[in-house]
Amino acid sequence: MTDLLAGHLDPAIIAAAVASALDEDRAVFDVTTHTTVAPDQQGHGFFLFKQSGILCGIDIAREAFDQLSPELELAAFYDDGDYIEDGAEVAEITGPLSAMLSAERVALNFLQRLSGIATISRQYVEEAAAGGLTRVVDTRKTTPGLRALERYAVRTGGAHNHRDNLQDGVLIKDNHLAAGAARGLSIAEVIALARDGAPHSLRIEVEVDTPDQAAEVIAAGADIVLLDNMDPDTMRPIVEGAPAGVLFEASGGVNIGTIRAIAATGVQLVSVGALTHSAPSLDISLDVRPA
Image 1 (cartoon, rainbow, N blue to C red):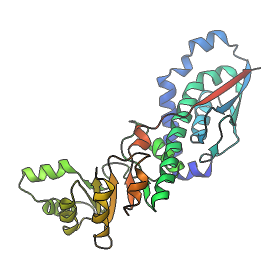
Image 2 (cartoon, rainbow, N blue to C red):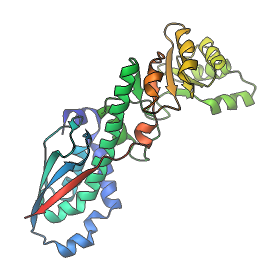
Image 3 (tube, rainbow, N blue to C red):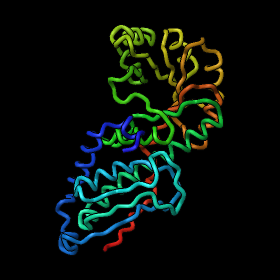
Image 4 (cartoon, rainbow, N blue to C red):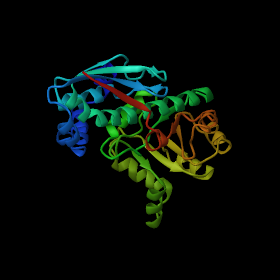
């Protein structure tokens, strides 16, 4: 297992995700392979990148083969995080052909999906760096059950993770403020409730969509101000006029064409849901050659 994967993703999470995917595919009941491939037939195959991108998930692909047959051996030629040119072979798999074919789709699904996320994450990071020193972060807009793997892919691409779940941080959004307003509470009073009730180690972040709201939130002592769906010209004076120590996150309306200008406003964070919810899978194939 690569150092990057071992240090940042629990092997038990990998094993569980792969087991669930193999069960969903009924890989051990692969009627086509069982009826057409000899039980003792051997083979080998090569994972081929059919477009350039960032490799991610090679050890997860290995786990898919391991779970169907410990006799299958995957030798990786590159590590997660490496940039792979179109046409490059990134790994070789050898062993029982039947198990290889039955695990093929699950292995490729993980490899294609995670490499796609890592690739688009790298693109966003590079664009943000061209505009400033902004940190690109993901969101909770992940595939149910695959959050840990997709967040790993985001890191592999050079971006960072936002809060992992609802327990990890206080993020007061417009609906929370609306709920407070319905009870007669001001924004400052909602923030005070969060400050009093949440663990002292958690920072308080509040979503705003106007400069006036931003000023109110800053005056109320929020640690992080989330500037939602604002254009760069609106964000810049808010950031430049804020007291030292206030962090700003830009969110909403962020795409590969706008992130450079957003980064140039001086915000410290830009959250991009597209890293996970809209990342196209990378085109990768497994060229299997029976013995």
